[in-house]
Length: 597
Image (cartoon, rainbow, N blue to C red; front, top):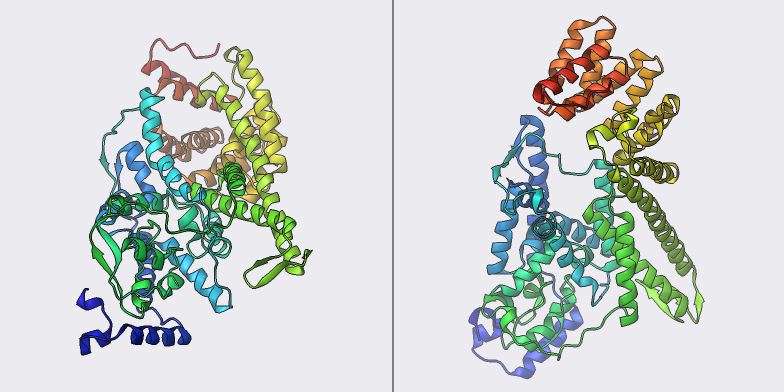
């Protein structure tokens, strides 16, 4: 027995009878579970973490450059492009630390977990204690997500597309950046993301709902925890009172595991230390010993699950379908948010099914159904589920058309640079190209017409498929105006809008739109060239030269690219500047034969 982990009476008196200890514990149970002392320290650590994140952003805003985002997802850029950044270093160190101390980084250093804890705290303040949703199969989603994010791109490059680049890229230093938010979603996406992955997953799936069923980083941390010698362990002072399990917000059966194994083996344990703090006998402690992999597994611990095996199978299908439906829809929903949405959709669908077939069903303190009759709370639950699932189905329909439209665009055999050029010469279009244009038009038009938001990626393709390419400039302008009214950040849409206005003779308006586009992104080669040609045609040569220099700074030394720019400018009647790019293409490649006659 470890002296630091026995009861105070044992330390002071040397011995105490077992029945007295049991009596004391029964009195403690009547008074309730004592408050965790470590929870305050953990809350302080998580608050400090968020304050440091805010300070990081402020420092970047003031100085213009800063350390690259300390976010595990940045590791993808290191693995795929060799860009060594702060996120990669943090993730690597976190995994190494987990291999030694166990999965404590999640509990003490994750801003999403901090949000979940805050949401759980708010729910408890109004009398709602989040109840964990337990699934046998969906717990593997985080690991599958982690493999998809961090392993699949390298495996794909090695097995499927070896010509796409070396297996191990050339590493470059990207520890400091001037574009801190380049890889982050916009505020309009971040707020719904935090609401879904914070509040909604906690409300429907339990205190650590997102960690358990969606977080891909946790997938790797869970694996590392199984190899770690650092565990919550127990002395013989434990009398199975269950306070530890009742306090655990990670859905771990602490009392059962320490009885069976002498330690907590569940990889979901995030070392919050609440169980240690609330133990009335001080029987739990953090210590080192055998890792989970070296402990024989036992079937003595019987876990109860929220769904039956048939429901598990249906749940997996629902999860996969809803994930594919929302991931990347409108070019807005990021990977992690799609995982969170899919878990909620799965829960709502399964719970609604149970509500329809069960005689009695409750959710929190609300009776959804009793004596075979659906109550008001039940109808409210059904209404919310129908709206949520309906939006998911609609997103799936839009995503389906976006996918087919993009696929049609990719089938076009001419290079992408020329595929985005207006009035591509007919001799460059094969039968497959023409068929792809018709297919792309049909699907992208359907997605744009019935979608709830504008898709920046699909918009430029639709403009080429349907509008500017066919010379319908007024229709193009109206469509792009509508899209820009929804999302002002669609810079490429502004570029297309300027072309439509120019073709309609509204030259000053076109210049204004192009100017706005290059102010938002100075690296837009085509827009700067269009401005140069426009200013030149109006006799404003100084402005034209300035835009031409800006464009030349970012124009790649590629004959096909110069030819594409020349075609676009030629279509707008800017022949002098177009000729310059045609000549550049020929200078780079004297045998280049792309020039139209």
